[in-house]
Length: 160
Image (cartoon, rainbow, N blue to C red; front, side):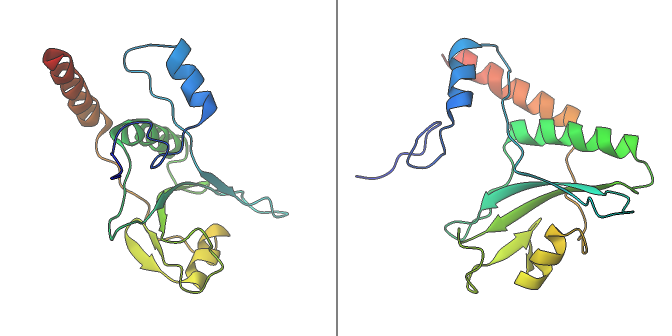
């Protein structure tokens, strides 16, 4: 039987009980419930404690899966706020999308990409230790995304 691509399809998307609870009991138009996969920081003695945000995405079927519109808006706002709070970039090192094509990260055949740029295992380790950081992900303007999402929502309601 072919798999059907639809929202909350447990064969394709991870169904998380806390999200299901929120969707069931907190029916609010426009409510977005997200999780952020990694917050990297260094607690080394005397370190400035840099911080980087990372969203993990599985590379499947020869395709990169990027952020959803809700993720673009919310993570983009977080990124903008953190950049404004640290204009010199001394602490906040940016937002990154880390793609991988195998759940076993120790497998030498597993491939990795950061923001679409192929990296090797050594670069991955350096990145996770905040010793090497490629150019951070560049978010589209949040207001433009919000308007696009609002238009799409209105079109869905009109079709219903």
